[in-house]
Length: 436
Ligand code: AMP
Image 1 (cartoon, rainbow, N blue to C red):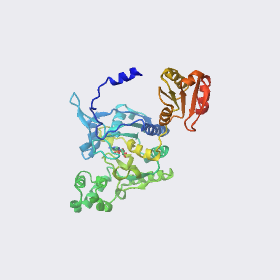
Image 2: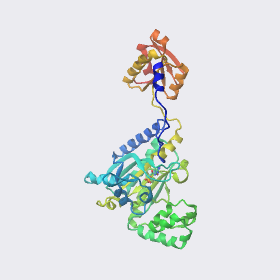
Image 3: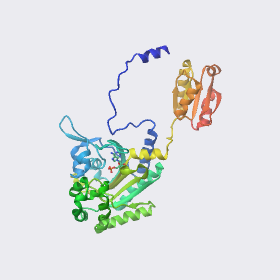
Image 4: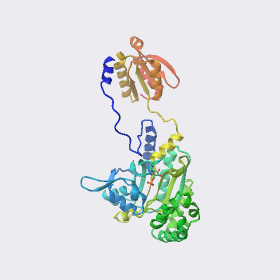
């Protein structure tokens, strides 16, 4: 004991040098059960539909994102983390997952395999935006992409995978918003129609919306500025101006969702920030997040992306769920995180430490999760620690138990305890916890 103290005092303390970068977060142990649940449900739901995991690099050439997003996108205009490496290449921390996956699809020759190729992914993404509740500079997404088939039924499939993911997580209050934004045949004419509608009112628009009027008038619907609200409400909707093939595809999507019994709200204001989207767009919203950050995830069809990247024109559809925001909703739905700890093994005095450590090892060998806690300490303090860790069972060994060759086993839920001989430990624990 004296030795330990001397050791810990021998370090000088200094002020910490670094703080977490703005817009980033630490995912602490208490958060992890939620992240495990989101990852587990992602694997499970994507797997059920035959989506296979893919991981692409965290950084890519800046050009990949510039080309995919076109000139008008906010992500490219002001949100990308770019840097120049030692060979003077311009690289970017990925702001989104779809363009890299389409690149990988062609790089790896997946376009030669039976189509569509179904892929899923989880990982970190980076956007330099003003941080606020539910908006981070490093955030995480679970996404799927089905590349190589233009059928609107694959759009339905993607939406169902996402819907089932929320259902498995038991997050209530998710609403699905749906729209079609047409394609290269009908969208240009609609864009002009929208400009004609807005042109006489330009002076009434917010500055941001005036810029969008020039670059990408569809994004006028993205405005959250109250100043733009009245005009937005009366604006023509693209769903009323779809070409025949787009209208038919949209009909199939709606019919598919109805037959899968997935409720949706038609939302003519739903347009995606990136230019390569065509036809179906959708978003999963959650009331509790409120305000501008109420989207837990979204996606759509992106038949224009492959060609924008210089590849053979290839249809695709997918979604990206925001895990950081979903974690917020999940914590609200399930405030008590499930714990994975079976046993908390306590040595009450230092001389018994190795003995208890060894008992813990023999329980781990049977598959239990066991935390060892060295002595010395008071029993009540140890039990508080065991409860805090969420252990279902505590083992207690003090000098008295050592003398009688016994172990105290405490049921942490029932708050009852018994003493057993060492040789009965495994059978008693397995009766209490199952398995072993
Ligand atoms: P997007 O890639 O923009 O379609 O975003 C898909 C989902 O990712 C959104 O619905 C959000 O849940 C999440 N997301 C996007 N940007 C951020 C961010 N900066 N911070 C946290 N979550 C984000």
